[in-house]
Image (tube, rainbow, N blue to C red; front, top):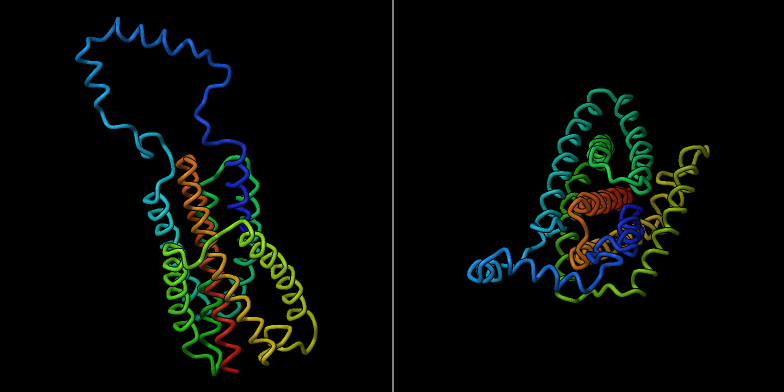
Length: 286
């Protein structure tokens, strides 16, 4: 997604020409010399056999493929689910430790996310570590929501809603119902940046202002529910940006290592969508 620092990095690298296969300063005449050398070395039959070989595909040239992105996304998602289960169990047994996982996971993923986005060399261990921290955070948060009286079942509802929204957005994008244009990217990106600033202010308000309502500004009133609906819609729209970035990375021949970055960005958006659904359903219950 364009607003995701990881995807911003990929787009900058694309603009700098990671897919440029041309050799700077090459002499066009070298081609004829190479051809002349080939005819001297190989027989006519050998040359014909070489010519008839299938052309190299993305896998042969070390470029991103859809299979790469899917497999790495599933791998990172499995880590999030696995460590989410660990976070759930730990938080259910010890509320204080669960709160530490909640806060530590939130701060840790924020720091790691920035490092991943701006580190010059792409680091797979950092991406894997991010998925682990994110899983612990999601598990602890989910257990808290599930344990509050009156909020029973919101975790299952949020999970189902997240899957349904992901599938719906994917189909809408693939069928052309949602078209990602430059204008669409700018609008969604600006909206996400604006919401991110609001989310930080809202978190500080809910955490440090005495007697502040649950969930911060708007609380569980109609205004609060409207805020959550806006956030859910924004997260859903950012999925379209993610799908578009994956397609563009494949089309421009991004190096295969970038499949880790694409998978990471997609998981970040899915978890964000899930958390916003949790908040929405909890607000509606109250």
